[in-house]
Length: 503
Image (cartoon, rainbow, N blue to C red; front, side, top):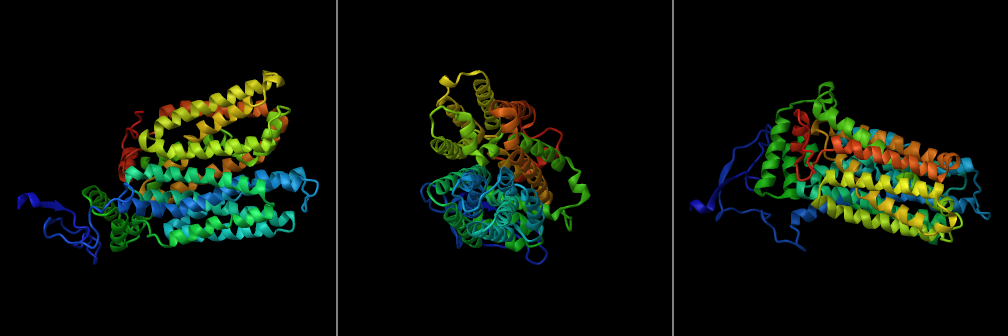
């Protein structure tokens, strides 16, 4: 019957892609009464989610769990350093050792980003996600067994290298394996994983000896390794490397065969056919507006993110509270726990907000709130009386952490997985993340010196001014990518008007 017949792209019963030459097959007429498939186009929901949404979440879970180890790497120095500085420490350290142990993890992150960017183009997204688990595991095991400062530095270098490799690779894999309606939430889960890792490392370090805590940190990359093994390669990478049949199978496993998914796959394959033999690193692709515009945008966004001070606070939480609270009568470890919980809760809230509000509103609110909390805190520390302090600085730092966690922290990473064109996505995300981690290192290495020379008030004032400037910049240049396919985002940057900037 006419009502039972529709033109659809044959993803499940016919060769949508010609296996001989990779060309697109014709659309075919399928009778709803006769159509058979190993997997239903509309599967029964599980807990309100389709089987395909759950598969996309599974694909994202490997990089997300690995990112917990990244958060542990950032947060571990905050509990490691106080134990090493204690009078009964088995490995006594100097102040210079302290800054190097903290910043050594950040030093190789930029190199790791470049390696990850090139590696995921050559080896694939999945294989690179597997390989980066090795330095994570080796670094944590070496940290747990280190007998001198030199080995501590090597261990921190290895975990930092893995963090750098994971930066672009995890984001691109999640971005390419998720549907537009889920992409923001799944990418935001990366920021949630960082917050979870920081909280876990602080909790383990506060309760256990640092060696046992480091040994337990190996569990995250081990679990991530298993999760990545059971998931498919990115359909976009397979299609761009002349493996159309595998790309179709991967896409179908992740997204199913509904009309929206069929249209996106057809667009993906047509785009790849238009670029036969194109080198993803070609000079022509790197000078096009679709690459240059997001490259400039994301580099500035990462500078704003890092110089808002969030990683300085993460790496030196205990010391910062010790200086900031002074004689306020608040235990610095309790204050650290409050800050960690606030970071974790707001990262979870961000996953919901990104699905409801989009990128641009969160960026603006985050920058304004972050700058305001830091500038008020700086003024309070500079001109307030010690009698009036107590929990007030803690409250402002918690407010700062809430605001920075809903926008400035997650959005550069979220958007790095979205804004670069497919042909240069690995290079673009790797180079941008590289700069982000170089600034990361600069902030972490300079943190102790800034607090020592400028004081807590001067340092927080600088971080606050950067965040405030960031709000102005993002108002004019931050695009909205919510609910857009990766191809739509690429096309929008290629055209003269930027991606929609409506809030």
